[in-house]
Length: 122
Image (cartoon, rainbow, N blue to C red; front, side, top):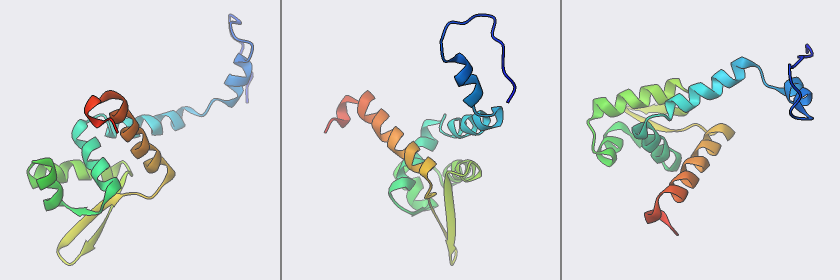
C-alpha cells in the first residue's frame, strides 16, 4: 500500500489508519445497504422478516399497505441482498437472509428503537 503523506500530523496513529483503511468499494457496499434501510417502511418490513417468514398478503396486512406497494419494497430489499424468497405453489414467502450482516442490522434496528422510543422500554 502506498504511504500517504499528510500535510498535518494531528493524530499519532494516522499512518496506521491510512494503511488499514478499507477500499472505497467496501464503503460503497455499506452505503448501499444503508440506502435500503433509509426508508422507514423497508426497515419495518425487514424487521418483520427477521422474525418470521411471510407472504406478501400477510406483510401487507401487518403494514396496512397494498400488496403492490409491499412488493415494491420487497423487490428493493431482495436486490439489496437483505432478504430471500422461496416459492411454494403460487405463494412466495420472504425472510431475512441468514448472514452476519443481516443479524447485525436487525440487532442495530432493535437497539435504536429501544434507545429512541420511550414506549418500548422493557
